[in-house]
Image (cartoon, rainbow over all chains, first blue to last red; front, side, top):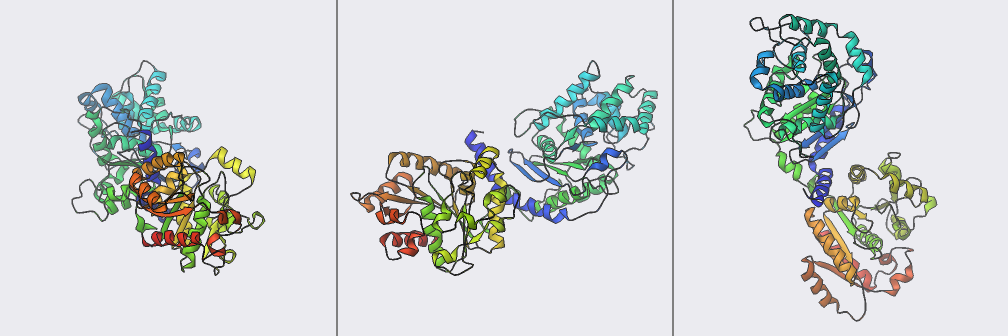
Length: 339
Length: 251
């Protein structure tokens, strides 16, 4: 992209009817006060219930951000999908498959349950599977592994990320259940013996600070075949993009994944920090942030935004009917009638 | 449907504010609801033409851009100052306070917020026309006003620097997919044949020339203390403004 084109593109993103559309969504759902803040550690209750950001990044690198898109929060479970991609790059599909399944559980994210035949955790999106996945991240020691993980996120988002230390320490201090799962998996030989180091890394990856814009960049990078559409940097080997997106579709929204796949049909991953990242392959990435969570632990406003986007532009993965609105037209349009 | 008209030139001193004020007033006089935005935040001035004194101004566009005031607080009914009825012509001035100008130059502002301000005022005042007076040259704000305009009016003088700069601006406007572009030639000195000049400029840029304005001592004498076409409605310059306004309304 030439400088002129990139400046023109940033201005057309401001004037695009799609931005007005997102603004209307933001206004419509800002007033919703359903749900509750996560409170299993005290730090998460410091979030403001009114925080609400919507960001969409297209494959062409246009950025549409509305509301609190620069507010930092912890990535939490959203990290799981991307660390899964790193594990695939480190070990290849067969080996990773032998350690973690890809089957939705229908159980809560923190269930202590392994596949009876293989002893594998069911999928990389439940905590047990995520810990087994984090175990696969290569590196000589804890520092190197954490550095590799942060470098990976930087390739996706185009910026450096920090760990929220109080949240990391809180997660670590209260993570008995995760610790139990890790040791259960060690018992079955499903994770290596550096369990405590891996658990630290797992709690750290959950405590990475991101914004709604980062979440949109993460999914837009997947949508763009593993290459960040703004920086042009490759974040994930293109062979594994489909692996990551598939588990997001089947397992990404905790035990609400089936209904999500049916109703919204955008592969997505949510986190208890209030984030959702959703992929529309070949098209765009969505990042939403609002810390009020529904009973299944998904951001209530974020769900509404994804539902509306999917419905209004026919973005359901399996939609074949003509959409109500043409996305490309809306994004590239300079809609004079919309004043 | 409201229409957005941006008045711009590559270089300063071409008469942007004067054109904006006269065109906006002419369009409002035809019974349309009109607002003028002074987006020339580094060097605002159009409030003088509408006889709005700094002491009458409490909130400005700056306060809106800094999220201190809603855009409606920064819109002043200036119709009475130019012989129009109330609730017909509004002005959103930029601040002339040195501190405010320094602050906006230092910190910049969110161009999205400017766009939201345009749209917000159009809705709130149920406007038919929004005129945007701009800072000369190319900047993010210029890009924005060009991109959202239904009509872009580019002013140039018969001068090599203006010719070259206008070529750049026309190129940018095309890249931003501007919908309609009109050129206006200002300060054409006496020995130039207006019709020949018009044809030459149209051929150069492939953009229609909506009007050719002579270098006018009468305009200079008014010294920005009022809108020329309301003070001298029968003057040839006012007639030329009406001609340009007509073309804007017909677009």
